[in-house]
Amino acid sequence: MAQPSSFADSVDDPRITAQFLRQVHTEGAGDVTLVGVVHDHPASVARVRTVLETLEHDRLALELPPAALPLYRCYAREDASPPRFGGEMSAALQTSDADPVGIDAPNWSFLRRLCTRLVADRASPSIARRVVSSLGGATREALTCRVAATLTNATSMTIAYDDPIEYECGHDETPERQAKHERGHVAGVQALLGATAGTASALDYRDETREQCMIDRLESCRAEGDVVAVVGVDHLEALEDGLTASATRD
Image (cartoon, rainbow, N blue to C red; front, side):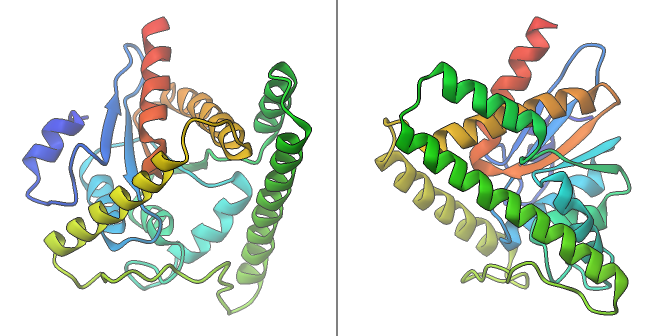
């Protein structure tokens, strides 16, 4: 597989840059290409499709709970291109012929890691309650997706889990316009997160544990060959660092 920086430089598309594309190489195992996305954004959908159409890969990893994967596969079977629902995730499934895997929580590995960390850190009762509450919400969402997939497969209707996010930028906009809007959106979100950084929160516990579980799953996938992983752009650095550290140890 081509190095992401070289690939980005070789593609005349402002939506494909090193900001959103990373790669980790491991001797004796497959490469992992991380494609950062903003959920439902037209630039992200286009980036995912272009990368998957261009780079050879053996596995497609998606930041989705395993229980939600069947619903997004239903979305991907629609004739619409990109699919009406599921944003960049269903677009990835529609584009790639590789075997897909959902790498996000909730799952048993995530639960075990999360409980171990809360105990080891002696987290306050208030943080623990908020973590459990957010976990319950994520579990309900995953199960809702599984039920929606069952109904979609059993009927002629497509059951939408949620409405697509509407941006002031559509799929018919120029690549330049899409890229500029997406970069502005990411910068705004990162500025907001930066203003609240520095204090431990339930969200920190949840997301850091999610990222470690995603790293573990990607390590397993790359043992089978080259992997393209579609993940939220805010996870790119943590996943790249974790996979690189693992590759160095190996």
